[in-house]
Every structure is written in structure tokens, then in C-alpha cells.
Length: 281
Length: 206
Image (cartoon, rainbow over all chains, first blue to last red; front, side, top):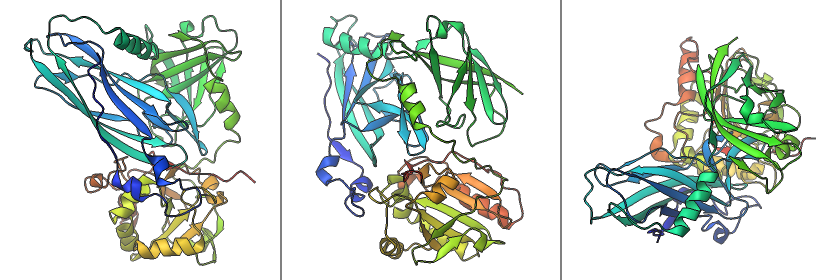
């Protein structure tokens, strides 16, 4: 049993007021209901004192609609989770699955279509009382867009017992295994990069390109000011050239992001959590 | 993590979308010229306002981020304060017909009246000419051009990238800051930021 409960969902009042005022492309109000269905899920069936448990906020978007990654790109807003936890419980950062690039006018955004599970580790205090039932809750805020954008928010909660051990839920394990498989792989060491006034050059680690006959790559930074998200990224050998973003000034000494490497012929797609150390030219 | 592709490569699909390079707008560089009709039917250009500070404000009346500022009276207050001081404020309605934010001249004037806005003019840009010239990707996008015609500020209206009006009072307003610094002869301390908001819809390039 997941132990998840669906909560009432409400649209931000401003978003509802935005409908059906001007223009011929306005959707009927009913079309904008339930653009996102949100669930709060837990992997284990009980919380072990002093242990860690995986939680997921799962968002299911209506076809054609998307929510955003931690760096939304040129437009949009990342999904935010505000946890409401019992005393001494802590939630870690969101582990974001690999997003896709989404054209947005002349810009590019990073986000998710269909369903996405945002994984969060829950740290259970050592002194959690076994036998007790605890409530884990969160308010989740998102922006969901197709041609228009609609902000949304929901409060989700679930109850779990505290126990030293508990039988696993195979359905939960399947869902969480799938979500973990969608996370980027870790790399052993940071990559080196060179930062110029208008360009950035990354030296991609050999392991990221290994075994790919005709590789192409995209770097999606965590920092939304670093690059021009819409500019083409050119891979020559192991060197990836990027165009710097609007916001100028000294680039950071070290930055992070997601490296997506694919074979032009298809069949291979790999994603890595990439740390880059810059040398300023 | 190794997974086989179920759909067309995301990278390849995007390479098809990225056509000609976008315009490059740099703080300190000359602001691009434009010629576009406003909501009174008059042809306006940047050159018309030579010698004056100009604010360009990209708008889309359905975008939650634009509604945040207009709903709270924030945008109108900025327009009133700075136009009273001689600043030229040009709202840019840049959605093509059929897209959210598209307004006819009559609708634009009606919007101005009903929400108590006070721009110098509302530029009608359904052909996306001004947007292309300025690489506009968001509503709201704010551009401040000094009296010499140089881009003095380009980016977000403030430092709280949300659609929540409760975030306005505590936010640092980059436009007000730039305009105040220009007025007192100081250098603009924050010249470029990442604009936030809905993406600007574009007419096909002609």
C-alpha cells in the first residue's frame, strides 16, 4: 500500500480570471481543469527510526502540457515542494529526473510532459517512536503550460507507521525503481571548461561519449543565467561549445548541470550529472 | 544510466527548431530601432524619442506573470511615476492573432482604461518585429534605454520570479532601480537579469 491520499486541487484565482477574456485561442474553462494530477507517494510501508525513506511527488500532465525542471530555461517556473513534517523529520532536495528541451517561441525551456516523479529523500529521526502514525505533508506549486500558462498548487499528505522493519510494497518498488532509472548518472570527477566573454567550452569526460558512433550532446545548466538556452550546442570530438547567456560578468568557478548525450543514429541516450570547473580566458 | 530512445531524439528535434540566430542585445550597446503602429494608429519609432529615457514593457494580458503586476497595480504605479518624470513608457503587445495576449487597437485601449494603466503608447506588434529585434522571450520583459539610445537595462521586472502578487512588496524592482540611477547620473548597477514569465508567441518569420 502506497499510503497516499489525493487532496483537493485548486487553480490560482488569477489564472482562472485570465480565461475567456480576449482572443480567439482561449480555451473553454472546462478544458483547463485538472491539467495536473498530483500524488504524494512513499516507497516503504513504514518509516524506520534513524533511516531514510524515498518519497515522490508525482505530477501527471494532460497531453500537450508540461511542467518545469529546476532550471526552467527561457520561460516557466520550476515545481516547488514545501514540506510540512513532524518534529525532527527532514526532507532532502528534489532529485529531478532527466527533463526534455521544449521549444518556447524563440526560446527553449526544460521540463516534463505526461508524468514525472520528483524524488525526495526523507530523513527519519533516531528517536522516532515505533508504533506511532506520522503525517507527511507538502504543498506543491507548479506552472503548467501548453500555449498558455496556468499556475497550480495543491496540498498533499500521507500517513505512515513508524516501525523498525516492514514488508515492502512491490508496486511501490516498481514505481520508485522506474523513477530512479530516470535520474542522471553520477560522474567520478568534474569536467573542465573554458569561459570566454560570449562562449563556453566544456571538455566532456571520455566515459560520457564511450561507445557512441555519432554523438551529439546538450548541456542543461542548473543556473538559468549561464547559457543561451536556444543557441545550438556544437560537439567537436569531446569539446562542447555553448553560447553564454544574456547576463554577463565573471562566470562562476564551478557550476553544475545535466549532460545529455545521444547517438545521431538513435538507440542510445545517456544523461549525467555534470560538474564543470571553469578557467576564465 | 542507459536507456534506449522511445521517441525522436530531443536533441535532433531541437536542431530543427533553432533557425537563424536570435538578435543579441547587450547592455551598453545601441538599442535596436523599430517602426510599428501604436493603438491610436500612429506609427512609432525609437528614434522619435531621441534624448529621452525609454522603457519597453512586453505584455500579454492573459499571462499570470503580467497579471501579477497589473492585478496588484504595480505596473500602473511604475508607469505613472516615471512618465510623470518625462520617461517614455511603451507597452509592447506582441502576440500574433489567435494567440493569448493578442489585442486589437480597440482592445488595447480598453485594457489601458479598465486597468488604469498609463503607458505613453501601446505598440501593436502581432508580426513580432519588435520582439525579434529585441530577442524577447518573456512577458513581462523590461528594457530601459537611456537618452543616448543605449540599452541601460534588459531583463526581469524584479527579483522574485513568481506569479504571486504577494511577492511584489518584498521584491527589488530592477526597472525602478535603473531609472532612479539614470536620473541621478549614476551607473546602472544591475544592467542585465534573466527575465521571467510566459514565453512570447511569435508570428512566422517573413
